[in-house]
Length: 190
Image 1 (cartoon, one colour):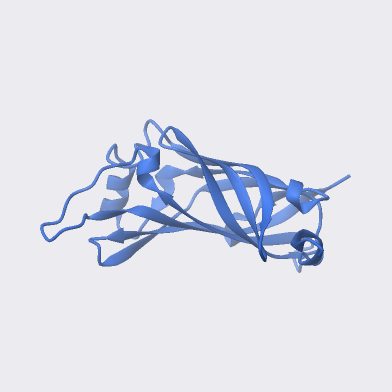
Image 2 (cartoon, helix red, strand yellow):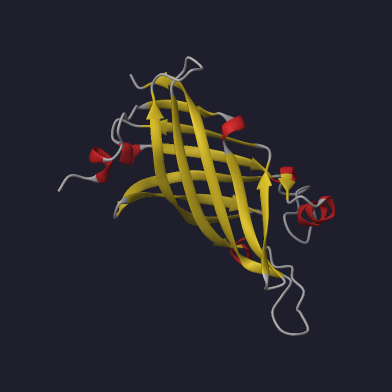
């Protein structure tokens, strides 16, 4: 049986890609008061993607400016930037460095190292290849990916919380992460 890398990546192009920040997003959700989810995003981030001839040998790096957090509430954003959470004066960025890509059933998983709040942990991303477009209306070549994961903020020594009288806590520990990438080919593989 052929691998999904060989059969489900139509129009695959090997090369080095830079992020189209206008068409990319890094977002998250977290439980609030145990009854709802707060959504947020980061407005400043960057990545470099290298798609190898063998898709499973591809790699990428990403950096997120933690001060760019936006949850649609400036007071909450300021609190998240504080020493209670991100402590951005001491740890201004979050980084991700892939260490491998593997097939998992009908999709890919990117294994990598996430560094947040001065702590590095292994984090796997479920990856969907949205497609390659060799000739866009912009006169360039593009690729799109979607990735998701869930992390526990306590694994990164972000432990601030307030207990609720009826049980539970103000902020959940599990963070769902959503990444949408559109990237532009800078250099095809030789």
